[in-house]
Image 1 (cartoon, rainbow, N blue to C red):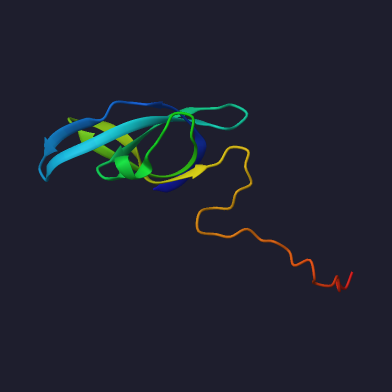
Image 2: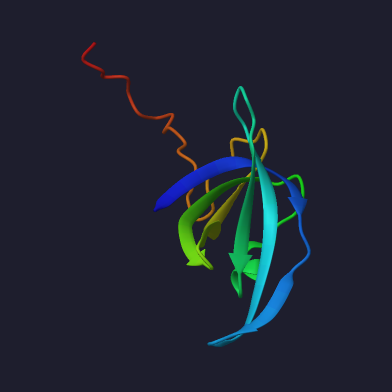
Length: 115
């Protein structure tokens, strides 16, 4: 199940490492506080190369694409929210997204609107 979550990074936890069936793994969890009337704190995880790729900093306003996954272990269910994409927002700025140019109206265009 995929979803998007927007908020501010309020905490970054220490990276964790271990060995699994497929070799060594690396995970780092971070806490995002949602921006709503009743803010919620959500613990998300980044795995492997995504940790360095996301380059997260406390205070960043982000839009995170999250994949939810649950696994059973010893008759108990554990759910994890894995971040697979993070887009940083410039707080208060109207800057266009990276790779897009802002729309600048042509001042020489006539105003021939039908209304």
